[in-house]
Length: 146
Image (cartoon, rainbow, N blue to C red; front, side):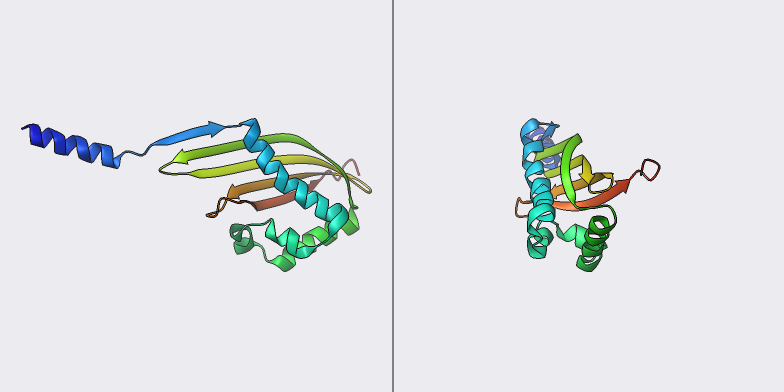
């Protein structure tokens, strides 16, 4: 009977997952901000497409081609203006460590461009190498206040 209990307890322990969950830690926000800051720096001063493309993950390029990303960047810069200033207005992070790890980041910026302001949203995840990559990028412009 003791052996049966030991076997049942062993199966229960094997089936369990052990995770630590961290939500909205300042240090995680800072890690993600480094990626968005590199992106804005390249838009403002650099313009190296390979550096910009390296900030984006494979999941992004499964949905959006590099040509489409370049078109979004060029259209935004030509129609609205180049990045002048940007301020982080909202952020969320979720880090799970353990048997089912994941790292997700959401950063929303108010961006002052040449002729208007935009709201730019970055969704990021850690890839299999542990690097934070952009998996979603959205530019919103308030057309009423243009």
